[in-house]
Length: 248
Image 1 (cartoon, rainbow, N blue to C red):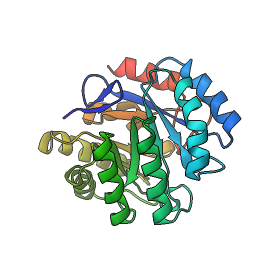
Image 2 (cartoon, helix red, strand yellow):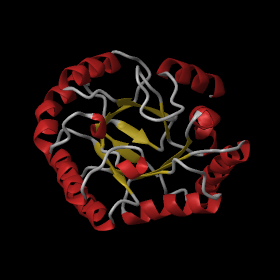
Image 3 (cartoon, one colour):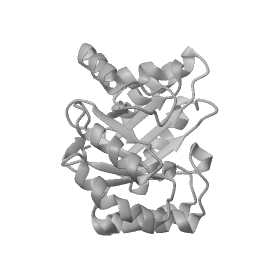
């Protein structure tokens, strides 16, 4: 199944590369965006709003038009990562207000919603996104371990059934077997649930191979970095592209 994020079709054709913007101030954010916009090999840009110094909707919407303009036609994914999943503390009501403001701005092509965050808040954001025709990337991040393959499959499937256009899981491997578990879960998803557009990542140095070769097992996207990584194990976009070209 294909999920359209701006001009990019996730789940169709080659694996897509997402690069995060991690700056904390408006000037640094726009400078970073200019560098990203001039860097080849990037399909989607993610703004990690939780890393921005002022994540109040007024401040975020204040810089968003210039940010959007600086990226040209590259799709923009807006993400506020909560503290429970490696980001920043936020009240459930503020999480809703921020994401709905981003959706209603008409200046983002998708938003990220954490699947295991407050369910009512997530559903409210999903409803707002559906009304605006904005796709939601459902996500779950485990910084302690790697669940069983069946659990990964279940989470990815549940995100899809909940109405999320794309399902994403990132885990932390503690052994090579954990990396194989991620590949096995991806393969099972591709074979048993072809209707689900998904990507899986094993974080950290032990999981780098999943960022380079995940598409061989069904993942539709992967993350790279320009400058500063937003998660452990991200590699520079030029190195990632070279590996993807080599693997085919």
